[in-house]
Image (cartoon, rainbow, N blue to C red; front, side):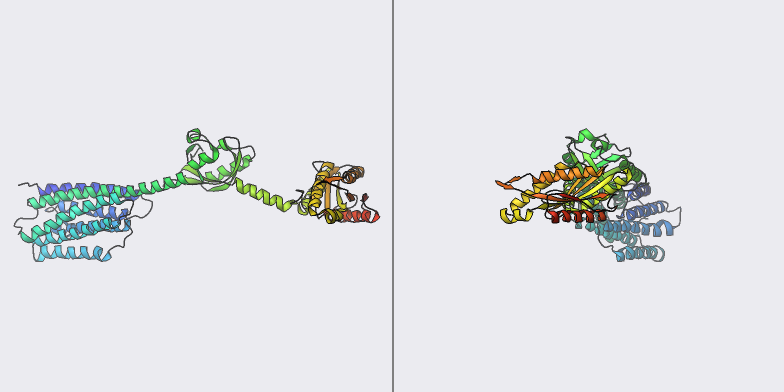
Length: 508
C-alpha cells in the first residue's frame, strides 16, 4: 500500500501555494488592464495562507488550523474561479462566491466543535472543491472561438483533475468510516494531497500561459494590422534611429527594410522643409506630446512626395519614453488636387491668367514694393476692340482661341515681375511693378497695341483686332489699388470714345 506522511505533504502544499501566489502576484502587477489576474493572485495567496495554517495544526488552535484554514482553501479556489469568469467576460456567480464559504465555515465549526465528524468535514470541503472546479472547468470550455482556447483547455484540465479527485474523495468518505485522525496517513488522503500539489503548481503555470497566450494573440493581431496597414509605420528609438518599418513604407519610399534599419528618417528629408519645422517636432516629442504635421520628403528614386504624419512617444509603465512611432499617409495626390483647386480659384480657366482676385493681391504687393523702393507702379486696363464681331461672325470657338492667343501675346510684352490678368470677357489688366518713369509704362502700352494689332491666324481664319489701353500710375494718379483701377478703367473708355486702338493716361 502506497502511503506518505500527510504532514509532509501539507508542508509541501503550503510551499507550492506560496510559490504559486508569488508568481501570480507578479503576473497581476504586470497587467495594464483588469483581466481577472488580481483575483488569481488573491485566491492563491489565500490558499497559501490556508496551507500555512493547516500545516501548523497541533501548534496553533483548531479554530485557525482547521476551521478557518479549510474555509480559506474554499475561498481561495472561488476567487480564482471568479477571476476566470472575469477573464472570459462571463457574469460572476456572486451567490456561489458568498454562499459556499459561508456554508463551509458553518459546517466545519459544527462538525468539529458540536458534533465531531471527520467524514462530514471531508465531504464538505471536497464537495466545495468539486463544485468550484466544475464551475471553473465549464467557464474555460464555454468559449470555443477564443484565441486563448488551447491555454484555456490546459487550465480546464488542471481544475477538472483536482475536482474529480475530490469528487472521488467524497464517494470514499460516504462509504468509509474514518477511524483515524485527519493527520493519520491513508492512501486516499495521500493521493488527494499529491493531486492538490499538482493542481496548485499547474494552476499557476496554466494561468500564466493563459494570460500570455492572450497577449500573444493581441500582439499577433497588432503585428498583422501594422504589416498590412496602408499607412506607413516607422518605429525609432529615442535617438531617432529606425528600428522598424512596415511594408507600406518600403512600397511608398522605395527603400527596403535592410536599407533603413539603424538609419535616421532624415534620409527622406529635402531642402524644401524649414529646419524650424524639425525643431518644433523634436521639442514637442521631448515634452512627451504627440506631434502632427506634414513633410515634403524625397523617395529613393529622387521623386518628391508629401506626407501627413502623426508621431507619438511610446511610454513604458514607469512613464519613460522608449520609442517613437510615426504613422504617415501619402497626401501627394491631395496636395496636387488642392493646388489645382487653388489655381482654378485664382486663375482664368480659358487663358490660365490670374483672375481678378489674384490680380488685386498682386497689385497690393506691387504698390507696397513701389512705396518701399520709392519707385512707380501702374495698372493698365486693356480692352479688345472688335472682339464681339469675331464671336458673332466666326463663332465662340474661334473667339476663345483669339483670347488665348491674346493672353500669350500680352505675357510676352511684359517682364516676369509684372502681371497679366483676365478680369472679364475681353478685358485684361496689366500690373507693372518697380519702374522709374511714366515713359516706361507708355512704351509697354505702345508695344501692346502693336502686338495685338498684328493679324491672328486661327483655324484657317485671319482675325484682325486692336486694343484700347487705359493707364493709371502710382503715385501720380492714386495711391490705392481701387483708385488706380477706377482711373485706368476711365482712361480706357476715354480712348474707346476717341477711336480705339490707342492708349490714354488717366487724369490726375
